[in-house]
Image (cartoon, rainbow, N blue to C red; front, side, top):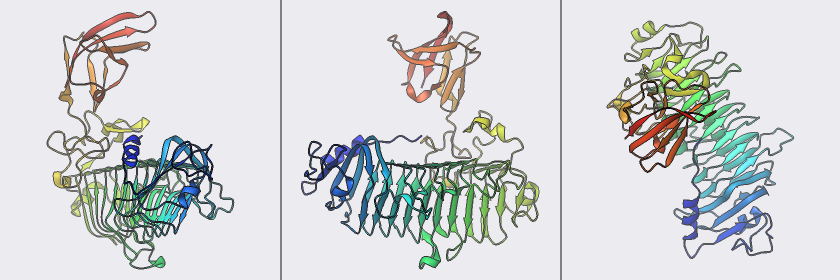
Length: 501
């Protein structure tokens, strides 16, 4: 789960321009107040919405609220955005804003940020398609650190250039998608979001020609997202000169008919063109279709991806309608198609067609990961993905999904996770029985039994770790002492020193 940082934003708002206002909203407030302090806060967010101007901010404190409708009201300007900020972790919107059944609505206004709200179970009795958070005909909109649960759609936008969605959780959309960016939106960034349990796609992007020209979206960046248990992980239509990287997509399409990533024409003017798909981990389950389904698209670059499938349909469907397909340095299973499964090609035949010359065939998917059964897709210590990727992605992919710098050992790992070099631990004078076992950024100790734990202390005898598994990042570089202890009778079973660097 991605961390959410609120305090620095609050500090920024408190020192903003003298010509802007900070309005406060809290459940015990009154709309007859001036809203300029907590003690004189408004009761409804809409009261603040009706009066905000460029550079103003609205601080909303923990409680249950009706949503707000920023419909053709004031816009922000560059550097003087209008910011709606949830102060606290439980600012919950559980009633629609009053325009349809949308929870929060921004329409016809620009340079607005929505930060930290929880939108939950907005009722839509007609099922006509209302949204937790909606932004339409609005440019330079940012939605971050929000959580949308059990709405028809999670976050929906239309005609929204320069849109940013980051650090959001969009789950259990009962009508369509988790995050849905539509209608000719350019310079879109969707990053660091978690989308799961949505009826349709985790992330959907489609510039429909039927809703106006040009029917394509330029400069779309979709990276560092986790999408699982949706019908489709990423469903991408008509995107041009775009990037898709460092995403983890698993268990999408288990109900049938879904894919990990779909690149297609649909209702756009053309299919996807010049899309770079780098360092993604895409696992599709039994009952799904393909890791990649590409239709009527041109100039697709697929490097350093894990595309592994338990589906009887195989791992790749790159249709013959696609031109200029460049795939290499990927992990694949031994089944591909160019005609939606009317016929199949094995890995050797696929390579003979000029595809994936440096890619790797995987026969046992479990050997690639630390724990496939428990959805831990960090790379195993003997994974074929280690140091097997290409540095051709280096201009784009600088970090992995855990924000670990790439590459670690001079050459890229394949997939969304880079494995940290194993030289960061040294066990000095260790008891022979209890030796360090390390995997990625975690470590534990050999031969621990039920009821046994490890206590780690620094050189000042301060306890800095207690348990059975540890994250290296929780320790500063240095020397530590450890003891293996039986919790039942508090007997020390073994001890030693660890040097962490």
